[in-house]
Image 1 (spheres, one colour):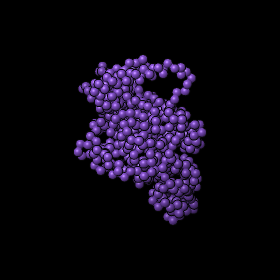
Image 2 (cartoon, rainbow over the protein chains, first blue to last red; image 1 turned 180 degrees about the vertical axis):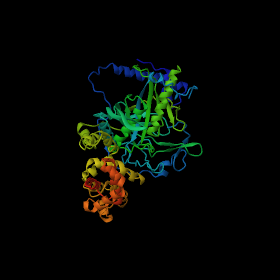
Image 3 (cartoon, chains in turn brown, green; image 1 turned 135 degrees about the horizontal axis):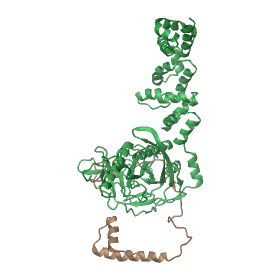
Image 4 (cartoon, rainbow over the protein chains, first blue to last red; image 1 turned 60 degrees about the horizontal axis):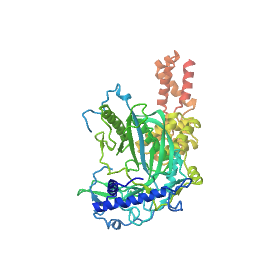
Length: 98
Length: 500
């Protein structure tokens, strides 16, 4: 069984762009450790010959036809944008090239 | 760039054999469906920013994506054409990362169960400077999977901002990944050409690099010949053309070789091609970009492509470039070169077949389309098509030549007018009195005059110098304004010059 280290918690938090204070990080080390320990309990079951479940739903092949539907008016699409010039969502300058 | 040495300056003697390049390509193509992959917004590229958007493709909370059937069918069509195994069972997954082009903070993609996998594309290896194939190469396809395109960022806005346009967000995107079978820039370039040709034949993507509907990346590493371990790779992005891809790969191979020869190590990184400077430059990478924490997309149900559906899609495929090329060579007797040129696009192949179906023999039809017609049309910025010159008209013109009604020379002169007026060639020939003169009586006068006016060459012919016959034929042709039948002139000349 893999122990959850504090660095694992910090890594996952960083990936999720969450800021954790020390108390929260300590608490999560314990909580995530318990969840993983529970997974280990499941691992004790014999699953030989059991099909892996790939999806929670039994339904398959739900599609829409390739037809267009009206889009939002641009004013509506942009109305909650923190910044806009009336055409684009404006964000802090992106330095990366695409 | 580090170090003073110019990586393009190998010493040419020993360097070239010391490393071999291992290259895999990743190509993203936008599928040309009418609506986006998960919502009904239009995929029109030319719409003003943020006008083809709705709560689904803007990534609003609580919305439900519904998969576009045609996007699945076009992806499967590509998989079949690439010789892939089609997955009976596949699913969509979430790929999690933060970036301004991704409002949901995840991209709906496919992770461990792509729609198709394990195919192969047979590629004629050419280079940007020469389109004559030097070899044939099998490049294995690892997988082709369906995902959604992201929004487009615009950097050229005033005020130090970037702008985000969600029109592109949710356009269906097919990612096609090769095995690392490519060994040099020529093969990579040729792969891109063959892949685009195939996808254009299938009609599933516009494959327009300028508009970003085809985007290519190369993973490149070097290793010692015979080594089984792969070297450290770099990922080269930002190529805007196939020639650009060729140059970027050439450069990157030379750069890595120099790093290794200098005793350094290649750093695993993403490098952007700077076409103006002709170099690749390390890009700042997304933080922890490679830990995407994929998990099954709970809002979309699995995709089951059973044998019946696969067969239905397969039966809807057009004849593919390779099969058509082979048929043109075997059934129609074209040379390998002609067959390749006339199958370069589906449009030119269709046009050629229409001309043949309208009664023209294959070889002259091929010659006219690739030669004079191509020249006349490119002056007018047109492609060979029924709209440019009805196939029946070209076939009729070729028939007029084949039956001796007009000379090839007259046909050549007539061609621009046929294109410009769209009038049937028979009518134009009639109206302009261009019919070939094959009547010996009508031509004998011209032949006698040519002999009389050119005693030197005439004597040469009598003396057995058959080369001079051509000159005299030319004189008669000229006098007849191109209308004389050269075969009849020849016969008359022989008569005149031997009967004396």
